[in-house]
Amino acid sequence: MEKQTTLSAKQRLIRSSSKNPGETRGKILVSLCALIIIIATLSITLFLAIKGLQSFIVNGLNPLEFLFSSEWNPTSSDPQYGALPFILGSLAVTLLSALIAGPLGIGCAIFMTEISTSIGKKVLQPVIELLVGIPSVVYGFIGLTVLVPFIRNTFSGSATGFSLLTGTIVLSVMILPTVTTIATDAMSSLPNSLREGSLALGATRWQTIKKVLIPAALPSLMTAIVLGMARAFGEALAVQMVIGNVRDLPGSLLDPSATLTTIITLNMGYTTYGSVDNNTLWSMGLILLIISFIFILIIRYLSARRKI
Image 1 (spheres, rainbow, N blue to C red):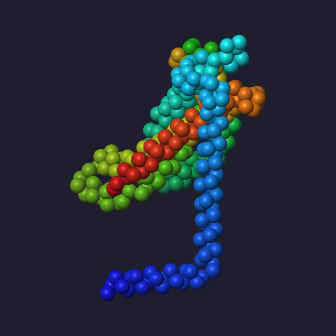
Image 2 (image 1 turned 90 degrees about the vertical axis):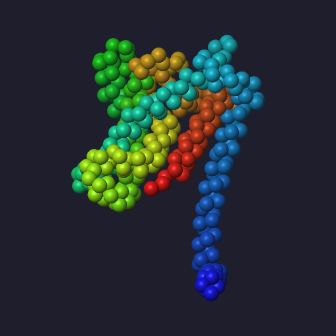
Image 3 (image 1 turned 45 degrees about the vertical axis):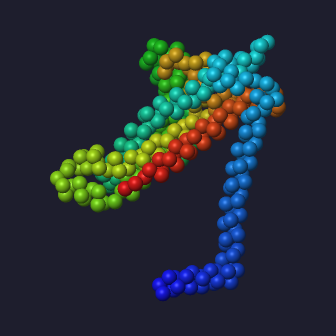
């Protein structure tokens, strides 16, 4: 009897929705919005895949040599197209910036949600929102005028101050708001029963944070770090201004380096569309897209593990 009542209620709802023209128009509108996003995403992916593969299919470059060779000299009599220094530079800057911004962002989130919520809302939250609104070029300009001279004068191993370390510091500040915001949401979403149960058993506030809350929110906290890494991996302008943009593999943190994004932005305007040089830049863009997809898969995997 109860099943029949439920079914009849659903049928009445469907009939009333089908008779309402406004409901139909709303469904069509939102469906079109979703369809446009899907088509745009597939079109960008397909276009980048076609252009990125041209250097291997049309120009005959060896994919293994492109990925694993450290020689990049497209202007020589025997052009070399090895993207390994730029791939490793991108990965190094991304991982190092995550190592700095991850603990700082999670620490700020814990402070705002568990230690001092009033100071967090009045002081830290506006600061984080301000950092989000600062353009990339401003971060790069500050790094160029402050960090580069500081590193050049402080560390004897850096002759110019343009280095992997400088790019890492700038990027870590840029992704800090992303990590902090998502980590704050993760800590805030934890049920109060976890805190109350731990405190009722005699645990201190710090023991509750360390032994109960952080393990419970760990998948979400890891998601925050991975999202920050995805943000860092695609950054171009700020890193380009401070990293040095050289073609060689860096020997240390104080050596200049380059990333996939910086090489693309530096060279795309100086290459002829459809040439080998231009196609290799599109291949670098395809590598960026593939690694971005990997970040998305990691995020989805971590999101599926969120159990409280």
